Length: 139
Image 1 (cartoon, one colour):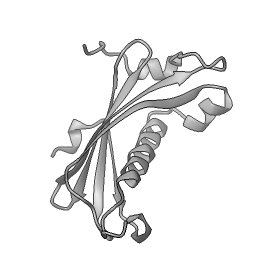
Image 2 (cartoon, rainbow, N blue to C red; image 1 turned 90 degrees about the horizontal axis):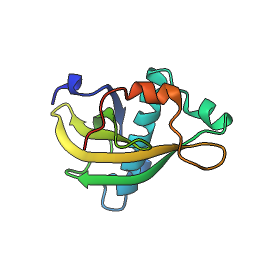
Image 3 (cartoon, one colour; image 1 turned 180 degrees about the vertical axis):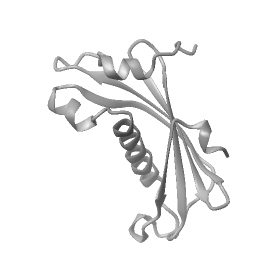
């Protein structure tokens, strides 16, 4: 795993309360990890998620695909990598991976598709977000 394959990476740690009765991180918690890193990435590139919301622009998830590879347990540290790509004229995708540290064991592979909704509830990608994805649409 090479960190430079991602636009942004973030290291985190598993907290006891995130584990279920089996002693592993509950499947829903991985979505929290992924969301946190998406927000951190957007802040890193100068896009303020909460400022958009105050302006009536809501960045929303419309589809989440997660492949669970290996469970994390309490005390594990892990790395989340994220890269953003345009999915269509009105959608974007975050490609995210979670790796256990220090061995970089693959934990989760995810594709999170989102859009931006304007004040009328219609899809509209803000200019700053559009510039972030200034490369061609993958088909």
